[in-house]
Amino acid sequence: MMALPGGCHLDSITLPGQRLHLMQVDSVQRWMEDLKLMTECECMCILQAKPISLEEEAQGDLILAGGPGPGDPLQLLLKRGWVISTELRRIGQKLAQDRWARVHSMSVRLTCHARSMVSEYSAVSRNSSKEMGQIEKLLMEKCSELSAVTERCLQVENEHVLKSMKACVSETLSMLGQHFGQLLELALTREVQALVRKIDASDNIYTTESTTGNLFSLTQEGAPLCRIIAKVDGVLCLADILTDDSHSEATRAEAAAVVAQVTSPHLPVTQHLSSFMESMEEIVTALVKLCQEASSGEVFLLASAALANITFFDTMACEMLLQLNAIRVLLEACSDKQRVDTPYTRDQIVTILANMSVLEQCASDIIQENGVQLIMGMLSEKPRSGTPAEVAACERVQQKAAVTLARLSRDPDVAREAVRLSCMSRLIELCRSPSERNSSDAVLVACLAALRRLAGVCPEGLQDSDFQQLVQPRLVDSFLLCSNMEESFV
Image (cartoon, rainbow, N blue to C red):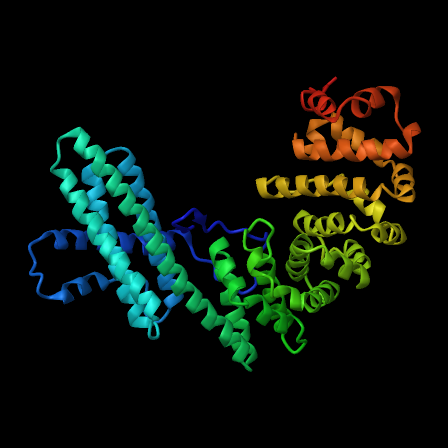
């Protein structure tokens, strides 16, 4: 994944399962495409080192051969951006190792890549803004400065002089990275804005569907792209899709997937979602309806994931979900294997329940819909395939189920119902048996907290040894006891 200078990394928060209309790119094919950019630029580095006349500015155009492909500015920016980000990181590593020959050759190559990106994007995009032109100029100036200063460093033998020049190179590299990040963000913002406008203006269902799919693909590139989508009010145009029943279920599910990515609590972009509040009620209502009417587990997963992230975003969403009887919709779906058949989906459901459980009214709704029994079942979530992703999902389900139970057990009726269903026995088993929780410390802490909450209401449900080891001591002491516990195989 591409990383932007300034510490922003394009780490995607992916949803499990096969994506709707998402183009799957073979990893070898992607490597070959990237290798083409790298090797052709390497050839141009050799040409640039030769004494070609400086009078012809068109010489730089030679580097344009073999670009990411015409007609797609977004893909061009992402591919070139990834290559340049990689080069910047590698130059920094070689600089730290004082490998000056490598630093210089990579600086020349970086200049080639930067010039290629600027030229290629200018060729396929509309007229660039004055601000972009200024940053392009600054970027190329810093590239030239970096190449020149690293070339001088090759001729210096005095260590003290070289040390002072190293600081200069580091500062130049840092400024170059900042200019590149600014230019890339401006260009990406411009292209994403055009994509959003295309969705808004389109009356064609197929165009809307394909463009929404493109928007979702961008969210897979990570936090910076999600932030840009939020900044240009991309979520608001998706609200229109979600609330319009004339769109297919697949299109609405894809829109829900974009909302889920952009509102992820793991991404530091929520400050750009202030306008999202204006349409939150419409979006939440549409997502609940999509969950209720989902014809497949994939659609339900995407809609419930969006709802789960929105409950982190604002507590008002939890109140809306209560008013929309979302607890009934979610709990009824749990008995439908066509919609809820994986731990990934149950992870979304229990996340929503955990966030809603901070509201007092939630307890009565949970009891009314026999939700305590469902939460009890989630404490026994087991992976079927044994893959790391599924095991981790099961751990999250167990942890959040215990958290939900602890919060709901503030209500004595919920606590008594949990004791009646033998929740305390299951919590004790999870605490004492590492294999039952896959040795997860997070599950252990949540189970200890839930057990202590239930014991406060119904202490008679505990044996003396359990009370003395799991409830009476400080939480940290009980945690250390259970985390160091070895299982008996007798």
